Structure formats: C-alpha cells, structure tokens
Length: 89
Image 1 (cartoon, rainbow, N blue to C red):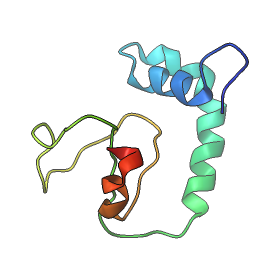
Image 2: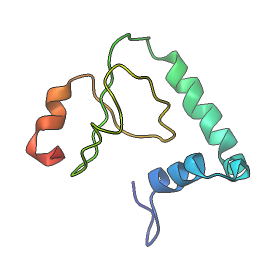
Image 3: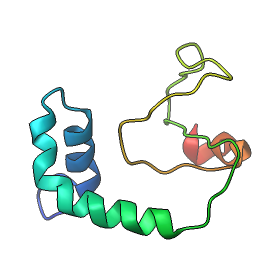
Image 4: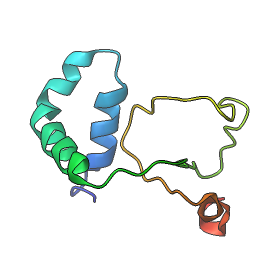
C-alpha cells in the first residue's frame, strides 16, 4: 500500500515502532488496538516463524534457538523454503 507521493503505511508505522521516542507511537494507538484485536481473534499456532530480508544475511546476528522481539510489522512465513525462492534472495 502506497500513499500518493509519500511513504507507505508500513514504513510510517515501523518508523514509529522502532523510534527511541515512544511518544511517536501515540498517534498509532487506535490503529494498533484495532490491529491487535483482529490478530487475537485468529487461531493460535505454535511453531517457528521465519522472516527474511532480501539481500541481507542476518544469520550471525540472530542465533538459532534464541528468541527475539521484532519491533515492526512485517510479512513472515512458517515455511523457510519460501525464503529460498529467487524473489527473496
């Protein structure tokens, strides 16, 4: 989703989520409440979730078996093979 001539919702939200100044999140509270309410209505699923970043190898920074909080909204997959497709490399 892109706004005309400006950054996308994804970029704006993630900038606020990752900002040191937590006050930047206040304008997003209503949206985040709606988003999280919808998310909690989805069925739970246990397992590994994978997140890839095109052209970046983060394997040395994020060790296998360690849990991390990802401060951003991004697409993920439960199938690591998806990240091995050419469009993600």
